[in-house]
Length: 526
Image (cartoon, rainbow, N blue to C red; front, top):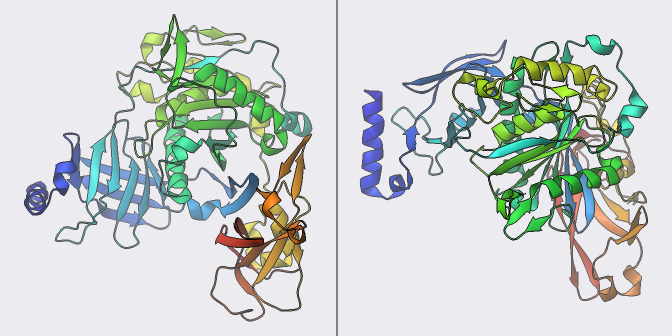
């Protein structure tokens, strides 16, 4: 009966307007309904339609202090977010391999991956049923049907251990760790970024993608692998110098090599992560014979995690989640898995035939395509217990305020406003807070005209020749409270924010326009 009602609703909508005409043969309208929700263990029973009901478990894949790194006017900006808040709506179903964001604010809204083929998202027009259920689009985007290649790259020389590896050594407990948490920075190129309306929607998409890949790693045992997403980096066209474009393609192998060199060159940005993974919106290709083959979907160095070649990359496209399988596959390479039936140096999966159809092949026949073979499991264990892979046994500590301090004291009791400026613009060491005599929930960050990065001197102020000499000194960036309080509230600044500067030139006057970056509750000091 409910199915008939849904069909009639769509039919009536089609008579009234052309919205339903936008649905393809692989799309349908559904009205998800929450059947059961338990706060004590975070589980939810969610019915998508008559044929699909999810038994959702709470997911946790983000570091507590999550970093978003962006670039504006050639300046690196760091935004620290509360990982627990970012993933508060994140759930998964280990049986169906579903990974979704579930929000009950303003009606039940579900968005994400429902398995290898199905995806779901709220309908843009917010159409509701007679039971006030929000209409959703259920659509197919089969990430298992493509014939694209994604493969591992061999090291051409002995593996180097990363700087982080040298400094930290093995964790206590050695190779007996039952769970390892590969700590990942995901980078996004400007092409993929342009497909999203905002950084927030991009961030949610990446979280769902990594969570979906992580479900596949629950099949790995001794040790258990739990992916940990620690940071998102969003490149601008100016910054993505490692992309090697040929004709209409992104040359895969050459780009991976350049990306590895880029990460090695800027170790201070990446040495704290076990792996750095690039998602691109460009069409990857490999050169075969006399032409470019665009079936390439991803690349990574086999056993690269924790070494200087800890990089991988794959294609993706907004709204499709087609990057889930390549991400899981390529990260398997980074953890030490060759293709099933193959051998790369000391890593061998020769005893597990390609035709068995596990995740480290391209074959998709049954549920084995969502799991790792025993050979891959053995190679992950081998890499984790090796000298090269021992950083997988350690956990990083973010250089920001820990949430545990919120119960007794506010962040402002631990950090000064000048430190907020310096954390926000980490490459501009001279940044400081300009003091004034007024007590208010704001301050001005000042930074120099130039910054020095290695041997490179970078202009902070673009078009500086247009500035009068009076402006060639330290320049202000406003930080303020997100609240609309006028000054202080009970002696406290609430939700202190460091702000991204965007400046424009008006004659010889420098004008700063600011926008918010990160929420903290703070009694900030000068």
